[in-house]
Length: 327
Image (cartoon, rainbow, N blue to C red; front, top):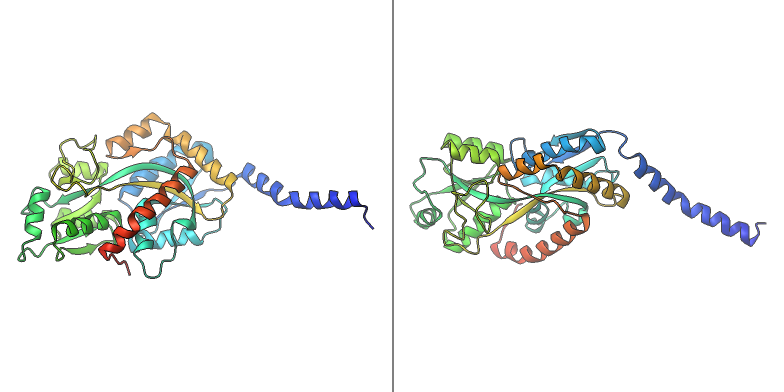
């Protein structure tokens, strides 16, 4: 029989095995390339954010391979990451709206914000109202007047159902009383922009990026309002929706990195520290600012979690009041 001292020693050693295993795992992480899922097709803001960030992460973490998984307004790729093994080798780069709007407005959500361990917020972004140059409106007020006309027959393009772009226009519709403004969802910002440039659709909302600003400056698209509370540093000529007479039409979302729920805190903290170092790069900061995005330099996992909880509480009654449905 074991003595009392021997039994206690054995119990202590056994209890320490998982902890030691966790420490060893964190110390050797990452031992292979990390997959970063972007839940939209190539060509949108998430690529604009994710690709240069992943490049800066190569030095501390090694290779990060981006995989674009479009569909359902970001829902397909986001759900896939929620189901992935919580080992730090599958991450999600998603806008705030994908974790809020889609789950709240779905009858049968396959994930929600609690399906993930937040790592870091990388940038804040605003939604822009854009039009084909031939569109019969140049301002948000002109669009409102036309949208309220029963003969307007207007539709608007977005990167998908349940995106911030979709939510912003639904808010706009509720403010002006124009329920007939029809939504045309695409599988991402790239396809939506292509049809806007080609004139297949005259109105759209997209997150403002460097590519959108280039199209605006080249007069291939007309960016005529943004959802931020102040004009964007990269687009000082574009008024805010508030300046156009819609003070409650404000949305500023963030794009962040998330790991599947139950990923160890050691791995999450390792990722967060590496991201913080990457975001300190002045060249990366300038790139984001020039693209109409605001870098998040002091983000922490706890801060992102707190922000998400607050935003869920804030937007749930709004989304339900709009009757927004994604399925």
